[in-house]
Image (tube, rainbow, N blue to C red; front, side):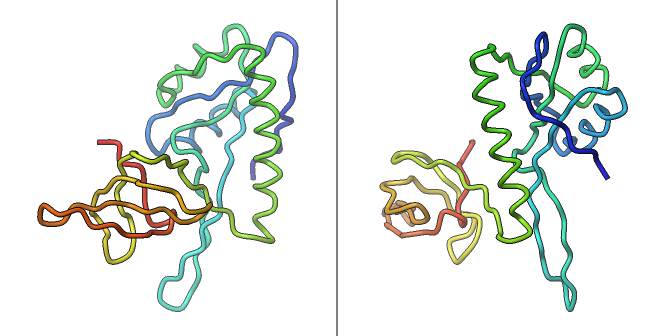
Length: 177
């Protein structure tokens, strides 16, 4: 089990997001623990049914990111792990906001025992998306408007025609291609 890291501002140290290679977040967190580098990896619980049993897993809330507290000489040590690609630069003012947000994320993470958490993309009109679930799975489209917090209207092109469909945010992903 991983120990609970204190997320707070410390003189001469900065909390920064470390961008990792794909699917290496837990390895980086463990590496940081072995080298006494404070690191926080927010996890989200996933429960899936396979045949007659439920399997519970914990996945990183933010793919390819681990939050680490770095000082002089820490970044080269992180890069020696061969799993960290780079650390994003953060100013002391940005760090203050980041620390508050990480503390809030930790509170949400602890609430997972009582309610399910879902991390959803922030969608804007004109943004390209890919449908991940449902009857339109695999199709691409463009967000035309956002109805409320959980529903969006998307234009999907079929046979040279644009078809407008209302989808749940959980069914779509931001198109990065």
